[in-house]
Length: 99
Image (cartoon, rainbow, N blue to C red):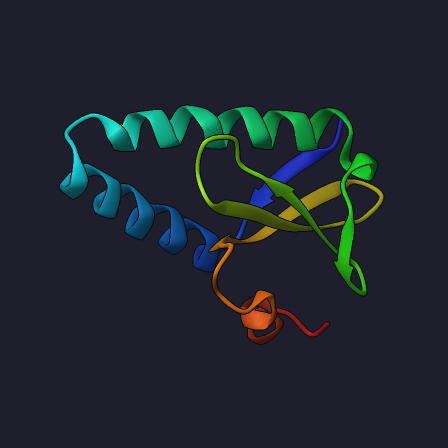
């Protein structure tokens, strides 16, 4: 099974999103966290099943929330490089990688 690595930037994305949703409604951040976890688990099970958006970066969109999990794969690892809102430029992660 592939190892999931989450970059520091992606962790900061998650923290920011969770704070935002918790301000909107108490408990909504927990709903986001559950949907994010489902997405990450699905990526780990079948990383090749999601579409490439740019070079080697793939996206798995999160159910119920307007975010995509942006990731790259190698033979042993899956690196999550960002959790990015669908209205933002998808090239946001290009500053986070050498892609």
